[in-house]
Amino acid sequence: MIHIEQKTCTTNDGNTVILLTPSGRLDITTAWQFRLKLQECISKFSRHVVVNLGQVNFIDSSGLTSLVAGMRDADKVNGSFRICNVHPEAKLVFEVTMMDTVFEIFETEEEALAGVPRSIAS
Image (tube, rainbow, N blue to C red; front, top):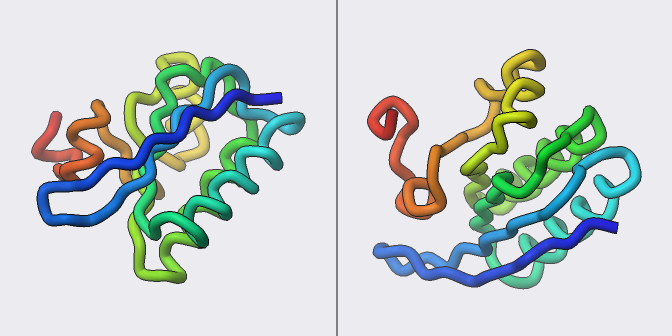
C-alpha cells in the first residue's frame, strides 16, 4: 500500500494541475496502485499532472513504468506530466536508466507548476 496525497492547483495561466505526492516505495507491490491513481487524475480531473517524488525513497522498474504510462496518458490528451523534488536515493535510478532525459524533472514543486525549464532552473 502506498499513500498518495492529492492536491489541485491552478497555475498563473489558469490551468488546473493535479499535484500527486506519493510516500514510501514505488515498486512492484505499489506501482499498479499509483498507475491507477494517475489514470484517474488524468481522465477525471486534469490533463496536467505534477508528481512530487520527495517522499519516495525507493523506485524500481515497475515504478518507472507507472510514471512512463502516466506521461503517455497525459500526452494522449495534450496535457503535461512533470516530476519534481526527486528523493536523492531515487534520483540515481533515473540517472542510471537515463529516464532523467525522458521526463520533465524540476527541483521544486513551484518550478514544476510554473513549467520552468530545467536548464533555466539549475
